[in-house]
Image (cartoon, helix red, strand yellow):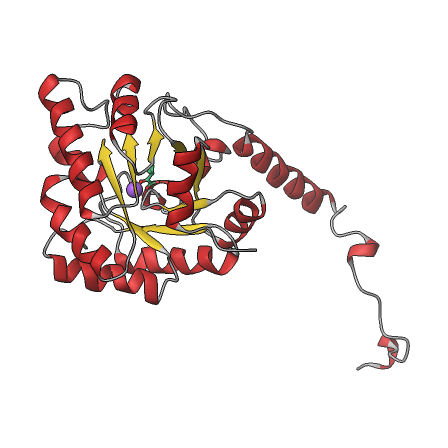
Length: 277
Ligand code: KIV
Ligand code: NA
């Protein structure tokens, strides 16, 4: 199968075809997503929360992103794989950002990277794009800025903030970004941004007016017990399914019904255990 390209995503927007995107952090789930024909996979730094157990994405390192990105790219044949750039790997300077993005592409096998933020990183976006690395932007709630934002909540709530969002989105498009994630912004604002841009917007908690949607896989599968964010929809309940399987396995071991004869191996015919000292 042909690998999906950033140009394909832009063409989907032109045709009015909604873009489906999901996060993945490991080989088995990335395989299932790829085989389901999902065109774009994000190796999100949300892996800090979803698979590494941190409170925020701030502790996530480039080495961790590389480790997970490699597992995901090894699993995919068709999907475009976008790797998140972790906190402080792209803010210091465009040169440092290029070196780090380069590792995600060269060592990790990613086809594109994603950077959080507007104004201050526009120059960096353009530097990466000129070097041949496709860049996805990320505006609205940018979780790496949680300590300045105060908490994870709806963004673009004032006229000034909406104006800033419009300006940042246009600046990222001009700098060569191929798409922009809009996270936790009012649906009408996200719709307006989407209409303003030629490049696709991919929403999460940004309403149905975006050109595509992204969800965190562990939310979609409800793998982590506990309440989900308002914007997430659970399509199954893996937390219950998995813990039930674990309990049944434990029960079978304790009762001696696992393993059965067919799950065990007999002696080779030539071996007589009684003759073995
Ligand atoms: O890290 C992530 O999963 C993300 C998406 C929520 C867009 O950045
Ligand atoms: Na992220």
